[in-house]
Image 1 (spheres, rainbow, N blue to C red):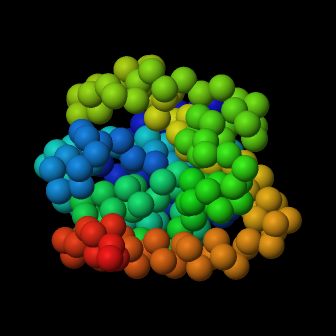
Image 2: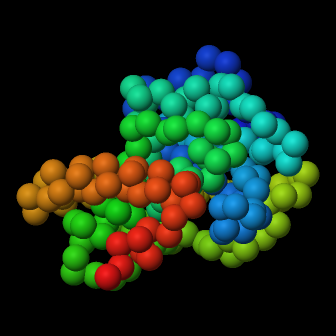
Length: 203
């Protein structure tokens, strides 16, 4: 695996012809309170790009162009959070995305284990370390351990998508998953407007 560090934006001319796996690291898990610190990207090869986002950054034109390009599929694990924090930070709308966690919940109803670590272990026989999950991602310098952890969060998403797509097709659930992705995109917009989706649809 090769890790390439960038500050505040991707370089010009970087392309991802097979879609791009995307993840984020933040100061916490509350969208309105915690800031974006890092964006990880991988094109399905062994090269992982880490974009460290300074607290003062408002624009990242190359990164946001990629995220808003409908021709490039963005592969997330738990897109509900990552899409929300990216859209809030950069004031954009992310088009054309896939969520491996949502795909797993629809395809793999025989289990309740849909975390990234679980999927990598069960589908790819890869044992991910989560030791750096709660480290301080706002530091100006990322440790080698943080870099490896962050890169691993996107390194395997293309392979997971391939496995999950095959199971969705086998079980006749591809159209249901596609409908769920559309519903997720709308749900994210409802939450951005300040509503709690669970409360909104409760009796």
